Length: 320
Length: 246
Image (cartoon, rainbow over all chains, first blue to last red):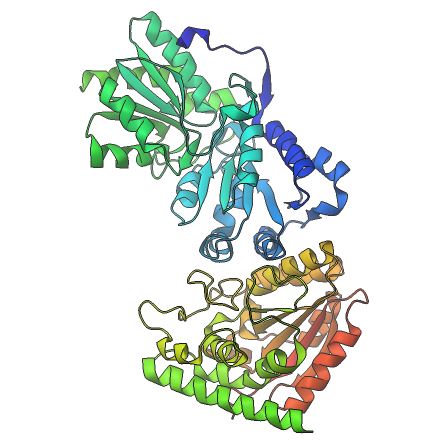
């Protein structure tokens, strides 16, 4: 597929994809139980609750207890989906996740909205930019960061069907829908190659995949051929996809709505260091907290726009 | 009553195990383990309906969760003596490559352990979740948990205690090992727990008290707790014990 064929007709928030995904998973599997710490509307759980009221647990504003209860629910064969904002579902309850979920290998799905800068006006207290790193460092934990509404819906169903502790990260703003909606198009741990190219590989996750699409389209216009990879699963990482592309393009840009430290970029860098040392440029937040603003203002100020990806790509190519 | 004599004999054997286990590796927490030997022996040898052919989901069984994971020696001894795994394995406690980790874990696949504990304050939450699953599964059996008293200084406990009271998780029986001791001194000195009975009652719990080192009292009170359960309130047993008892 050519990069210019990628387009969108509609924008929706990824959290709404989660809301549809958990409802569909609930229809397919009666063991799916949703938990929420006083953020039902933000997590788009209304439809699930309406259809499966006895399989919904309102925990109140008590995330530590929510994670513990989720671990306990798995013992009776339930598939608990613990939901809140990403800041409160990861950093706030790290030790609970570490001991009661990851170390205990409990089949808990931690599904969090409002990750990253793009929740906007609430500011840095809510804008977690460390969650991918926190979660991927835990043994046993799977980490999935879907790119749009369609993919979040598919990812939600896929992680519920697959056994094991999992973190699913999504967000608040409406965002272009450009990935396919058919079940077969999403596989945990299998990167999605959105366009093939020869001069530079851009590997992105979450909202930044769309910005990478825009960047790639502009680079192509300037005569630079881009291979674009949607790395929706941070762990387990699709090492083969990285190396296959890297061996062709010989330089890489990673793009994510997360700190440079510990994010997708560092995961990719580990692979390159071990197997194929080639230039890599990061597009990520550089050791800083966020602040209040609109999503676009924040992406601009913190260097996560298509233009930043274009500049990083040119830098990476120049370092070859 | 011969069964009480038998239980007392078993508890004595458990105490021997605890002292041997802690002595051979020169580490671990014998005091709280010895203090809870009578309670855990009564639970596993008399009260609980269980299947020593261990299944993680425990459907149709009573479940027990140890929140104060540092008293793992008593837990391991009771599980081994009850038949979950070979008694000889107790000799590997805290050694490299052992299933008997310093604090209990599911990670090594030791039968009888359903969740890791050690980092304090998480066990009641897990027990509440397991109790909710039992309700969803129309499973009539009980969920038991044991927490330390100093451990109640952890805030997560009070989230769980609030939730269980508010949502009427009444198939749950939690015992508090009330020995008044923690690492830096008495609980009164470190951070006084105050009137625990009034606190639990204010959170909507039924409160019972017992002497955890008198087997007859333990049996009687846990049975009373079961009779008072499933009536809209979770049950807590404030269990006076003496650290190192026996």
